[in-house]
Image 1 (cartoon, rainbow, N blue to C red):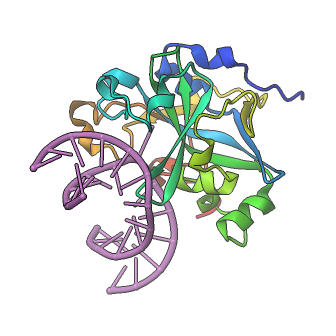
Image 2 (cartoon, rainbow, N blue to C red; image 1 turned 90 degrees about the vertical axis):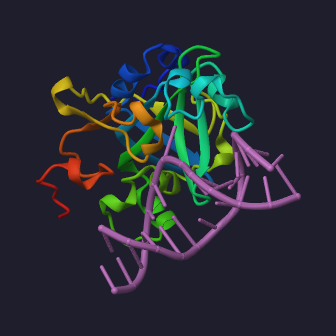
Length: 211
DNA sequence: ACGAAGATTGGCT
DNA sequence: GCCAATCTTCGTC
């Protein structure tokens, strides 16, 4: 099948919760250090900009770090978490609407030897790319790439040809945002049912071939 | 200028 | 299950 890079307009949709589900099954690709690596997006979280207490842009907070969230959709927002982990987000919606989608897990598709080397692992295992901090390491994404366009930079997203039906999509509370008060339990984390590469073991399903 | 907290991970008990 | 690692960011003094 033909590889089709998602156009900028794809990211301009105003409903970040719907887009978070639409991104499941798409292919996240990087070409960094001249090495092509890619994985299917299997878990996402929606962060609904100014109205979401879990969002870095809650109440229209604007700082040097979060400024890129206010750009028109279709750019990367990458930030350092706990001083260690680079977390990759997709900025969505129109300019000045700071919605973003955190990519929490991917299923490796291409460049697996490169990803293994970057992760210092010997063989394929969900730990390679299951989790927002480890998938960036596998793909070579760092905060240097925050602000990069997803249509003309070393990071982009492609159609996979695989259609994920609503029945295959599960939803639950977002992870690691207990500080978000009444927004803490919103079911804005989405994942592909029973996919072995989901970050949270409890929601992964019981038939993982890696157990 | 200071210090607490963080959209996590991996190793050890 | 618990906890340290590690450092930027941001609120407060």
